[in-house]
Image 1 (spheres, rainbow, N blue to C red):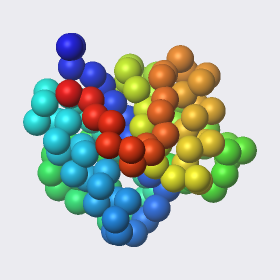
Image 2 (image 1 turned 60 degrees about the vertical axis):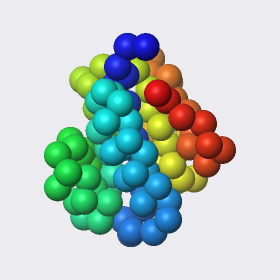
Image 3 (image 1 turned 90 degrees about the vertical axis):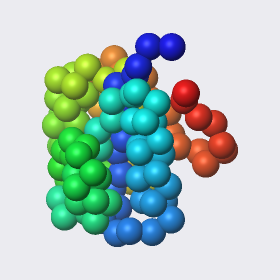
Image 4 (image 1 turned 30 degrees about the vertical axis):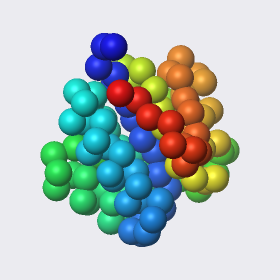
Length: 118
Protein backbone atom coordinates (compact mmCIF):
# COMPACT_ATOMS: atom_id res chain seq x y z
CA UNK A 1 0.00 0.00 0.00
CA UNK A 2 1.33 3.43 -0.90
CA UNK A 3 1.82 5.86 1.97
CA UNK A 4 -1.19 8.14 2.41
CA UNK A 5 -1.40 11.86 3.09
CA UNK A 6 -4.03 12.28 5.80
CA UNK A 7 -5.42 15.49 7.30
CA UNK A 8 -7.15 15.21 10.68
CA UNK A 9 -9.59 17.93 11.77
CA UNK A 10 -10.59 18.62 15.36
CA UNK A 11 -12.56 21.59 16.69
CA UNK A 12 -11.91 21.00 20.41
CA UNK A 13 -9.28 23.06 22.18
CA UNK A 14 -8.99 20.76 25.20
CA UNK A 15 -7.08 17.59 25.98
CA UNK A 16 -9.43 14.70 26.70
CA UNK A 17 -10.04 11.17 25.49
CA UNK A 18 -10.95 12.12 21.92
CA UNK A 19 -7.87 14.31 21.49
CA UNK A 20 -5.64 11.69 23.08
CA UNK A 21 -6.98 9.03 20.70
CA UNK A 22 -6.32 11.27 17.68
CA UNK A 23 -2.82 11.98 18.99
CA UNK A 24 -2.02 8.27 19.37
CA UNK A 25 -3.56 7.43 15.99
CA UNK A 26 -1.43 10.05 14.25
CA UNK A 27 1.75 8.78 15.92
CA UNK A 28 0.93 5.17 14.95
CA UNK A 29 0.11 5.99 11.33
CA UNK A 30 3.28 8.06 10.99
CA UNK A 31 5.27 5.03 12.20
CA UNK A 32 3.66 3.07 9.34
CA UNK A 33 4.98 5.59 6.82
CA UNK A 34 1.94 7.82 6.30
CA UNK A 35 2.12 11.64 6.28
CA UNK A 36 -0.30 13.27 8.71
CA UNK A 37 -1.26 16.84 9.48
CA UNK A 38 -3.86 18.41 11.76
CA UNK A 39 -6.19 21.36 11.34
CA UNK A 40 -7.59 22.72 14.60
CA UNK A 41 -8.52 25.94 16.37
CA UNK A 42 -5.72 28.26 17.46
CA UNK A 43 -4.39 27.44 20.92
CA UNK A 44 -5.72 23.87 20.95
CA UNK A 45 -3.69 21.79 23.39
CA UNK A 46 -3.57 18.72 21.15
CA UNK A 47 -2.35 20.92 18.28
CA UNK A 48 0.50 22.18 20.44
CA UNK A 49 1.42 18.63 21.48
CA UNK A 50 1.36 17.37 17.88
CA UNK A 51 3.45 20.33 16.73
CA UNK A 52 5.99 19.45 19.45
CA UNK A 53 6.11 15.91 17.97
CA UNK A 54 7.03 17.38 14.57
CA UNK A 55 3.61 17.33 12.87
CA UNK A 56 2.41 20.18 10.68
CA UNK A 57 -0.54 21.88 12.39
CA UNK A 58 -2.87 24.31 10.59
CA UNK A 59 -5.26 26.58 12.50
CA UNK A 60 -8.63 28.03 11.57
CA UNK A 61 -11.91 28.88 13.28
CA UNK A 62 -14.57 26.16 13.39
CA UNK A 63 -17.95 27.54 14.39
CA UNK A 64 -20.36 25.63 12.13
CA UNK A 65 -20.77 24.02 8.73
CA UNK A 66 -21.71 27.42 7.28
CA UNK A 67 -18.53 29.02 8.61
CA UNK A 68 -16.73 31.16 6.02
CA UNK A 69 -13.55 29.28 6.92
CA UNK A 70 -14.76 26.30 4.90
CA UNK A 71 -12.91 28.07 2.07
CA UNK A 72 -9.74 28.10 4.20
CA UNK A 73 -10.18 24.38 4.92
CA UNK A 74 -10.63 23.70 1.21
CA UNK A 75 -7.41 25.61 0.51
CA UNK A 76 -5.51 23.51 3.10
CA UNK A 77 -6.87 20.30 1.54
CA UNK A 78 -6.03 21.32 -2.03
CA UNK A 79 -2.56 22.65 -1.19
CA UNK A 80 -1.68 19.56 0.84
CA UNK A 81 -2.97 17.15 -1.81
CA UNK A 82 -4.35 14.90 0.91
CA UNK A 83 -5.68 11.45 0.12
CA UNK A 84 -8.06 11.52 3.05
CA UNK A 85 -9.63 13.78 5.65
CA UNK A 86 -10.45 12.31 9.07
CA UNK A 87 -12.94 14.34 11.11
CA UNK A 88 -13.47 13.93 14.84
CA UNK A 89 -16.44 15.90 16.17
CA UNK A 90 -19.89 17.21 15.40
CA UNK A 91 -18.57 20.72 14.94
CA UNK A 92 -15.66 20.10 12.58
CA UNK A 93 -17.28 17.27 10.58
CA UNK A 94 -19.80 19.43 8.62
CA UNK A 95 -17.24 22.20 8.01
CA UNK A 96 -14.41 19.87 7.02
CA UNK A 97 -16.69 17.51 5.13
CA UNK A 98 -18.02 20.33 2.95
CA UNK A 99 -14.48 21.54 2.27
CA UNK A 100 -13.40 17.99 1.38
CA UNK A 101 -16.34 17.56 -0.99
CA UNK A 102 -15.40 20.73 -2.89
CA UNK A 103 -11.69 19.89 -2.97
CA UNK A 104 -12.15 16.31 -4.18
CA UNK A 105 -10.65 14.81 -0.99
CA UNK A 106 -12.09 11.60 0.46
CA UNK A 107 -13.36 12.04 4.01
CA UNK A 108 -14.36 9.77 6.85
CA UNK A 109 -15.73 10.56 10.27
CA UNK A 110 -13.72 8.87 13.00
CA UNK A 111 -16.11 6.33 14.44
CA UNK A 112 -14.05 4.73 17.17
CA UNK A 113 -14.99 1.36 15.66
CA UNK A 114 -11.46 -0.04 15.65
CA UNK A 115 -10.77 0.32 11.92
CA UNK A 116 -7.20 1.12 10.98
CA UNK A 117 -5.07 2.09 8.03
CA UNK A 118 -1.91 0.05 7.81
